[in-house]
Length: 259
Image (tube, rainbow, N blue to C red; front, side, top):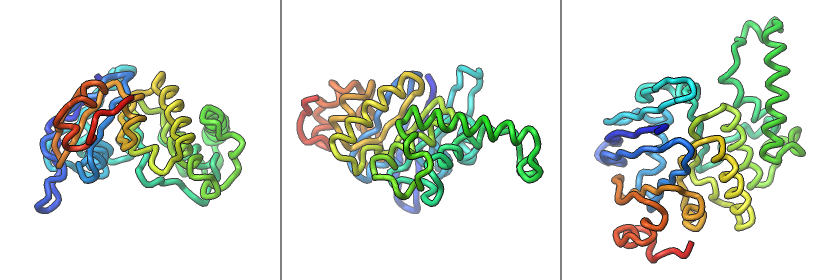
């Protein structure tokens, strides 16, 4: 197991956006979190990644490589990134005035040992790390097939490439768990197919937790699926089990899916 969410609740005023949700993610899986708009999926992501402090419950991440356990409740987003979780957002959040290369270089910042003083006086440590980050960032761009756009300003990229760049920047932080919040939103069918191939490739290296409304994509990629409705977990199972679950069909899918 790589992450455990235990009895998570999030209350905003009188609204219980997430209500006693528990689930886990195993190493090497693609796990999907699905449900209607307003079901509480992104709120779960925000609690896991430190944007919200949950009203109740805990989140644990297990880094077997470094033999460490992290309790995420109370940690800041940058601390959670150092605990090797990374995420993307439903609404793309890039540094639009920076180049594609610079956006990816930002992702490597969490691993640097040099500090502001080193950068100001250009210490040997800073120069060494700067050279290493530049080379590593180019390697990431090649992995994501963005190297031809390295010097383009991020805002100038087509929408599908901007999506890919945001994932590339998250990948640069060296996560053990990558949270993707509706990565196919706004993509055309061809772009969605390319994204699916990318996720399949990423799964060989990184565990993935995915929020997505494209059910064909979810059924194709997910090892397991959790379904939320009105802040609560409605069902959990394999894609075949979920697409034939009567409660899920009634609440969300509408009819069985041919995957």
